[in-house]
Image (cartoon, rainbow, N blue to C red; front, side):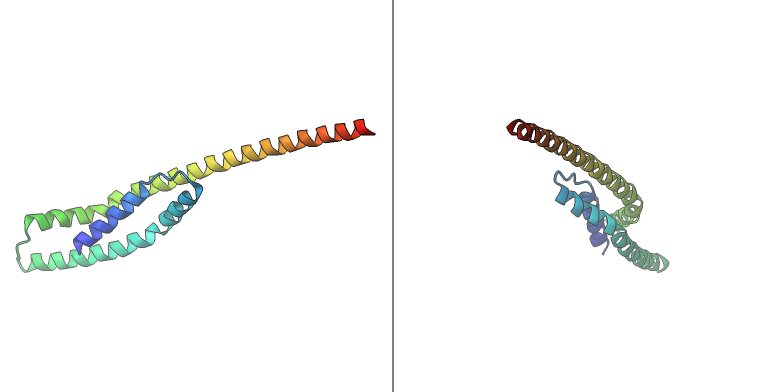
Length: 130
């Protein structure tokens, strides 16, 4: 179960590190990041259950292999490690979203200016024809 928890945290981490280039990819990543706290809560619950079982083994004076202890430690550390990664990813997405919106507004303004200039030209031609 510790392997599963680590793998799910690693998947969260990998997905958060993606850098989308297209707006639809960015929206998907943003939705993923917004849903991440729910996944974190589920994984945190699993870590609590794992901790209880490990404590039970310790109370029985059972020896836990070193590699299991390393995995256990890695599992316990993930919740603290993932928070800044997710926060940074969300900040990056929001900034990218703002830049894309600014670029879209600039293109819209340019288009409106071109339409206005073309309209003026057409009006000038219409007046010449009169």
